[in-house]
Length: 79
Image 1 (cartoon, one colour):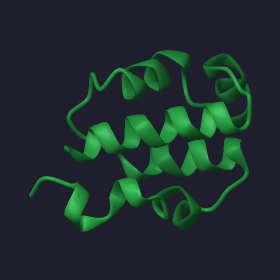
Image 2 (image 1 turned 90 degrees about the vertical axis):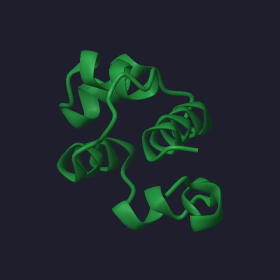
Image 3 (image 1 turned 135 degrees about the horizontal axis):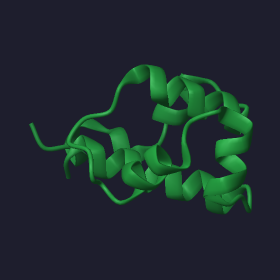
Image 4 (image 1 turned 45 degrees about the vertical axis):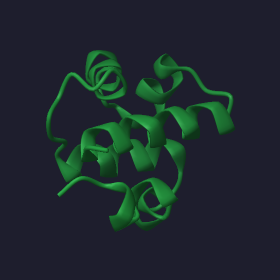
C-alpha cells in the first residue's frame, strides 16, 4: 500500500474510534475540511508532516501514536 493510503486509513480509523466527523476534526485541529477530505480520499500523493501534526492535536494524540498503527509497518508499505 502507498503511504497516502495508510494515512487515509489511519485517519478513518481514528475518526471512527472517536465517533468524530471530518467537520469536528476540522474544528479541533484547524486543518481545512477540504484538506481532511482530500487526505481521506487519497487525492494527495504525499502529506506534509505539519498537517499530520495538526490533525494529531485535534485527536489529542502524539505523532508517534498516529504512526504506531500496523498500517505503517514497513512490510505493509510499498517502497
